[in-house]
Amino acid sequence: MNELKCLLWDVDGTIADTERDGHRVAFNLAFEEAGLERRWNEATYGELLKVAGGKERIRFDIKRGDMPEMTDDYIATLHARKTKLYQQLITEGHIPLRPGVKRLLEAAYDADITAGVVTTTTPAALDVLIAHALGRDWFDKFAMLAAGDIVPAKKPAPDIYLYAMERLGVVAGETLALEDSGNGWQAARAAGLKCVVTVNGYTRNQDFSGADLVVSGFGEPEGKPVEVLANPHNLTDLYCVKLSHLRQITGA
Ligand code: XBP
Ligand code: MG
Image 1 (cartoon, rainbow, N blue to C red):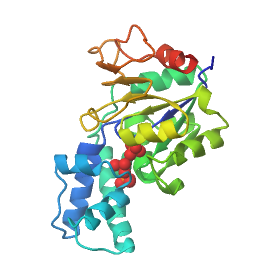
Image 2 (image 1 turned 180 degrees about the vertical axis):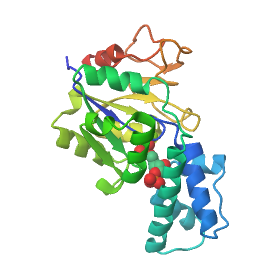
Image 3 (image 1 turned 90 degrees about the horizontal axis):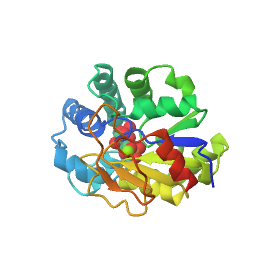
Image 4 (image 1 turned 90 degrees about the vertical axis):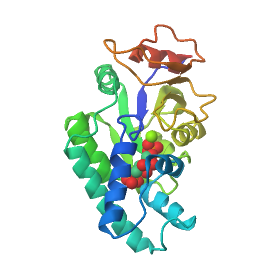
């Protein structure tokens, strides 16, 4: 029986619904500023989300012939501008945290459970989300922020999870991953971790077979009940996801 010692948090889609109204909008603004005709509508962006990483996503769209050829340097400049535009959107307060995120983060912090961030997004995009949506105190409360190109192979590769566990000195049995997407779940699984998946509109129909809990969100005690999509550990009282549920999963 393992005790829960560490929670590893994905960011985009898990902590906040940043993709459709944040990253996607920022990509399109950057394309427009650069004089590119391409726009990623909601459905196209949903397809492109199978490619983790913004620069990688642009490269994929070029390769399949939907954007003109560009050098890696040009992609890096375009992506840097996209990050700035994304930061503006977050600073303007357009993207709130998903329900239950702050509650779970705080409950775990109060219980001395280590919290780390494992995200594919660029560090500058992560920092602004922490500062504006979560609160600056979380720069200290997170024991580690692992983001973007810190590992060469992005999710679904397990690398960022393996990196995080090594940095934090924790092992898979005492660590739980919190993810929203197939890529994230596969990365966590490949690192040997148990995983709770909190789906969103883009990821709801993805394959999460084998995940330890799949819910429509973490929810709040005073909000609407969460929808439970898979509950292999037969957890009870799942009106909203509580720290006690996460402990039961690790102990199972
Ligand atoms: C997030 C991503 C990121 C963002 C865009 O995946 O794939 O690429 O969409 O961020 P995850 P950047 O939630 O699994 O970490 O443009 O900064 O790469
Ligand atoms: Mg995600």
